[in-house]
Amino acid sequence: MRWAAVVLLACAAAASSSTDEVQSMLGALLESMSFAISQLYADRYDFLRTRAWYGNSHIGNRPVQARAYYDLARKVAPGTICEVGFNGGHSAAVFLSAAGRRAKMVSFDLAEFEYSETAQQLVGALYPDQLRLIAGRSETTVPRFSKRHGRACDLFSVDGDHSYEGTSRDISNAVGATRPGGTLILDDMQNPGPRRAFEESVHRGWLVEPECVDGVPIDVSYVHRFDSSNVRRLNMSWCSARVGDVLPPELSVTS
Image (cartoon, rainbow, N blue to C red; front, side, top):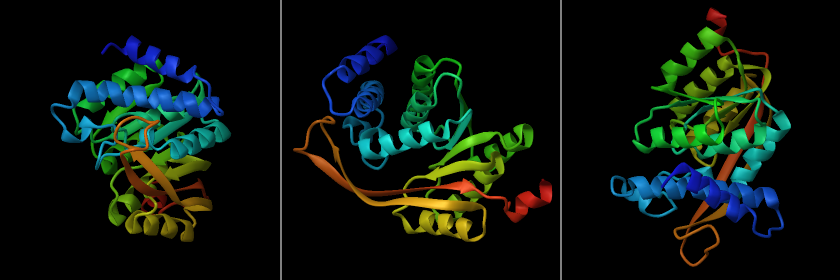
């Protein structure tokens, strides 16, 4: 499928009547991205054979969460957006659609899936010259970025390693790459490991003014976003916080 066809599909769907035009636009945009990637790579990845992306789900099929991320980005109005966890590019598309033409985005990802490069091309076509994808392990790439660019990020999304240790490390590195007063947002806070890492970061003063949305029931359809006959039920939580004045010890030594 050509990218132009994907964009036209999104625009046509977004033009349909809706009580929430933003929600309709986001749903169409993200559905189009998922559909394009699935059409190209379903023969190589079993989880791409339905839109649920079972085991690799994303905010593209969680409309309530996608809207929450969009609204946060509109509120923060970031000049530079950073994220750990690009995958299929859905969160990147949400953030860039909210932040506007002047925003730049830096995504850190393992790039372990072939389709991530295609997703990068798609998001790059939708938002020219606004996205940079840095491949590699975030424990290495994020500190390298902050060493070169300082605390450049205004909004940083953490959605990488979902172990306690991995999330703790990503939060620490994200704080080091984000300006004081900037915002972190974290996905999958219903999982004990990531939630513990977040709460400890707040307790230590790395993050302040925490806000969490807990236990949101989301039905992810295996068919399309309007279908409710065959769904996967999720209960999702996500949290955000401002970056405080206290740096993690390992960053304080080098700052």
